Amino acid sequence: MTRSLPFGTKRKERVLRHVRWRSTIHLLGNQWAAFPRFIWTFIILLLALFALKVDIRALEGVGASLTRFFWFVAVVGFVLWMVDLAQEYPALGWTGYYMGWLALAGIILSVPDMTYVGYALLMVGIVLAALDMPSRVGFSAMGIWGMLVGIAVEHFCLEPLLPGRSSVGVLVYALLAVLLLYCLGFLESLFRGGFADDLTGVGSRQLLKWLHSSLWHVAERKERPISLLLLDIDDFKGINDRLGHAFGDATLQRFAKLIENEIRPEDILCRYGGDEFVVILKDTTNAEAVTIAHRLRRRVSEAFRRELPDNPITVSIGVASFPEHSNSLEGLINQADKALIAGAKLLGKNKVANAANLYHPDLWEMLRGQLSSDVLPLLELVSLVTGETVDHMTRLADLGTRLGEFLGLSEEQCTTIMQAAALHDVGKIAIPKGILEKPGPLTWEERQIMMTHSELGATMLTNLGVEASVVEAVRHHHEWWDGTGYPDGLREDQIPLEATVLAVVDAYDGMTSPRPYQAVRTPEQALQEIHEYSGIQFNPRAVDILPQFLEGDAVREVAAQTFDI
Image (cartoon, rainbow, N blue to C red; front, side, top):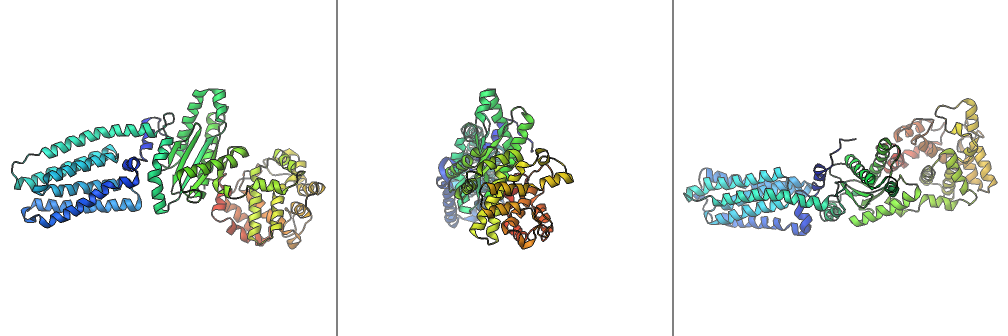
């Protein structure tokens, strides 16, 4: 975990980084904030017209060299500004824009008949530079640059032509820059007060609204992905009721700091409600956001279990992404909230739910709809006795069904795989719990007992009237391709195809999930081990398809709960 920031102004400085260098965009909106840029364009055109009229021979030696230098600086500043527009580097764009502005003002100031216009442009430029709320160091450097421009022009350009001319203009500019430097601190205080949450020091709900004007037009224009996480602390009301609101406030502060330390500096953390927080992940795809969400969920659980063992705290997270789930910030929050409720809060909490699942039928509900009412109580009993979770059942059903589709199986066969995936461990109800939870290798006698679970499960399901194809898949999902499996020693095509598919995905999910009797493998290690047993334990055709099927996002989502991918 990265080093934490102390609570207070330094943490609130992180809020300012999201509006610094371009606060006029947040104040005026992107369209109106472009107004100063039109002024600069007008100045360039104006300078081009005056360059035709000014007798450049009036400036000689250092004065002429200084003017050429200012033109060079203006061009460099313009290039830096273009880089910002193309690549989104606001500090660089601010520097280039106003560096060029003040250089152009110095060129106009060097024309004797345009000195007042030059002074005015110097002052307007430094005022607009302050409104973009740069850092104090950056603004001080820009103010000094403006003073150097004014002093150099008066000394080398105006003094030879107009001896004894007063430098009141530069003095007024310097006083204005000092005043603006002081006001910059006041402007920062206003932004902190409006955009930072008083309790936690992270961004407030107001910051989310203000960021929309600058964040989304960049994402839309450059087609950059953005993902949003909606984090909700589980049972937070109970914490307040049991331990008091002071303890609840301290918990929120610790939670905010923990999340802030786990995300990138450019990501945005805001307190959205009482115990709800929003994280905006820039340039982050939905698959990457799901992985990050699982990591945050685990970090919160681990940290509070260690720090508050008597009051463990967990978090549920909803994930939504731009542009696939919504084209607006409000839409992403709504989609993440729906996913949070349907996919996490109603399924036991301490979970990550993806808005992508809102666009597909809920697999658990599909499973329940496919199974008879006589079988459903068995699923709860399996979970209690064996420790198998709804997540494991639905994940296995999803993997098995999709692998069956990749293999070109019929809809009926894929439905059989889905049902068998939910019911494949029913027979473990009859296995002693000491064997199921044994952390080390089983003895020969214990293995013989464990090997009866598939046959026992098939018998139970037959007695409950479950379809024969499902019963056969459950009975034979531990048969080996070379005939050395159990319970009947079937080989190759003698094994029901549905059972061979179930065997592959069950092995993959088992290896990449925590088990008391084995070390957890990475997805790559699991695929390698399955490949080594192709044609021995597993159907070679299913093994060949598996890496293609699990390419990219699927591997991430299956293994995200265990690994920091």
